[in-house]
Amino acid sequence: MTALLTISRVGPMMSLQDEGRYGFRARGVSTSGAMDRDAHAIANALVGNDPHAAAIEFALTGGAFTADRDTLIAVTGGSCQVEIAGKPVPTWESHSLKAGETLTVGALRGAVWGYLAISGGITIPKMLGSRSTHLRTAVGGLNGKALSPGDILPLGEPGKLAPRTLGTPYLRGHGPIAVIPGPQDDYFDADAWKTFLRQPYRTTTSRDRMAMVLDGPALKAFKGHDIVSDATVVGSIQVPGSGNPIVLTADGQTTGGYPKIATVASFDLARLAQLPAGQQFLFRAIPADLAEEQAIHAEDRLAAVIADLKS
Image (tube, rainbow, N blue to C red; front, side):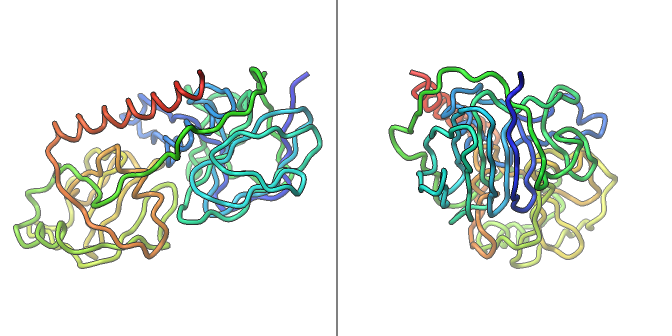
C-alpha cells in the first residue's frame, strides 16, 4: 500500500520540484526544477534518496505535514525553525518522523528558497520526464499547481531509515556574482559596462520562480532595448527599457525580446536566488572557459558531499 504525506499548512509558492525538465526548451518548455539545486540534492541525500528525486520546495516559510508511515525528513536551503511533534530539530540534517506525528517548518532566515525531502521521494507521475511543477503553465507537479492545505502526496519506498548529518556546514561562496558577458553584450557601451560591474545592485520583492527584478543604476542599451526575440537560458540577464536588469531563473521563458547583457554563471545562480530582498551585491565578469572550470569544481564539491552522506 502506498504511503502518503498530508499537507495541512503551506507557505508561498510551495511546489514539487526535482532536477528539472531537460531537452524541451526548443519547443518552448521551461527547464523548471529546484531554484537551489545544491540544497535540493543535499536534502534528498540526507534522507537516502537519489539526489534528483522530487521534493517540496517553498519560498520564505514552510508549513505543516504528517505521514502515515515512519519516514525520514530533511529541511535545507537556509536556517529555520523545524519541529517534530513540538520538539525542535536542526536543519541540514535528517530526522525520524513517526507515523501520525506533525512536522512543522517555519520561516527561513537569510535565504528565500527551502526544501523538504522525504525518504522514498514523492512519486507523482512524471510529465515530459520530470515531476517538477511549472506554475505559470500548470505543467507537472500535482495537477500543475502550487501545493495547498489538504493535498496528499504519494511516497516511494524508502531505503534504510538511518538519519544522516553533514560532516561540515555547506557554505556558500562570497563576493561578487559571476557572469559571462553576452550574448548581446555589444548593445552596451563602456559606460554601461562600468556601471554594471562597479555599482551595487539589490534584490527586490519582484521575484518568483520565473525571474527576479534587480534594483540599482539603470543600464542603457545604446543599440536599443528591443531585439528580435531569441533564445534565453536560465541565468540570462535581460535589460528592458526601464534599465533594471531582470535575471531569468528556473521557470524563465525560453525566448525574449530584450537584449541580454550577460548570463549568471551556473555555479552562482542559486547564491543570487537565495539573497533576501534588499540585499546588495556586485557582479563580476569572467570568461566562459573559467566559468566552465568553476562549474566543474562546484559539481565535484557537491558530488563529494553527497558521496560522504552515502558512506
